[in-house]
Image (cartoon, rainbow, N blue to C red):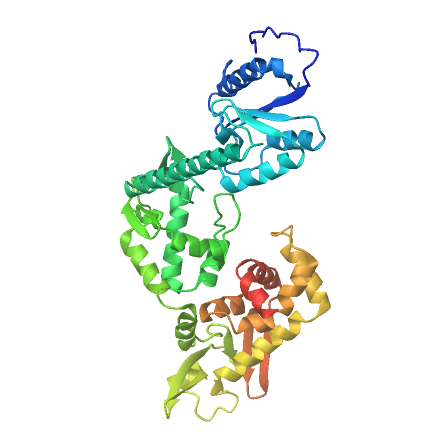
Length: 450
């Protein structure tokens, strides 16, 4: 950058040399790439003032202290830190600024600066607001000017907040993290059809199951990911469910306005999902568990190879569940002692789960499961696999019935029951999927179970 040379008169021999450091600042980077910018204009005015004090021994230090693109609301600025370091090392006697708010807009911050510079015998001068910090009147003037500078900063902040609120009231997109289902074009949200289908799927599954964990499990099975390509977790699901952007609205500080963008979730689907959200998670869990599904439906058989069907009875207001042989239901099992007519659902289901738990405690099963799971989850460690399997006991009772059924079907090949007992056959190839689910769909539940 070419700048005009200044004619500097020789320093009088009798004058004491006073080293002056010029500090300039601009809040934004706009225009700083120009050949002659705001920082240059500030510096020219300051250098001219220093030159006018040449007879008093004022000279410029060679270093430049320019902060372009830094707010005056704090002291975390690189050029200012260099200037303070040079003051502490005795290299600067006077700080010269164009206006006092170039140094700081905060009265509290400026008070700290004044304490620092006065401790080293340094003064400062504003070329458009002539005063000296060495006098009481100068310090009074300084505090008054700083108060107005801080007031101006606060007013600017209020204007920005008001403008932001007004823009949101018009439904405008005001930046930030782009939600899944949208892209940004010309500073507006536009629908990303592929991602939008994924968002609608989240709402559909949750409205159907009423369970965040079950929703994540199904999304994982469908390989649904976030905008960054990461598998969706429980936190992602609830953020999506509560984002009013998806029904074409813009929210700001509790107020909701029609948005400029297109909705990607139908209102009736939104309402169904939120009707579920209005029920507390604990109540939802109790309601789902009250359905008491038959965990072994389609997996439990008699010795004759026929499936046992789930049934139930109530006595004194209490529910009793059973698995009953098909021949008994059809009435053709009379006199056949080889047929187990019915078995307590609670007892046989407990026996199956106990078998699964015993299997998961075996060290060789942990290693084998880890190797199987790594095929689809390369980052999974053996320690994570061990923790997931060993926390299965505590986690099981926290799962919704639909989640329990899915896990049982992935681990149990079949159960054959007869008068002599039960033969439970497990599926080891389902363990890899179990670990992926336990480490991915419910990390918060795993922590709670630890």
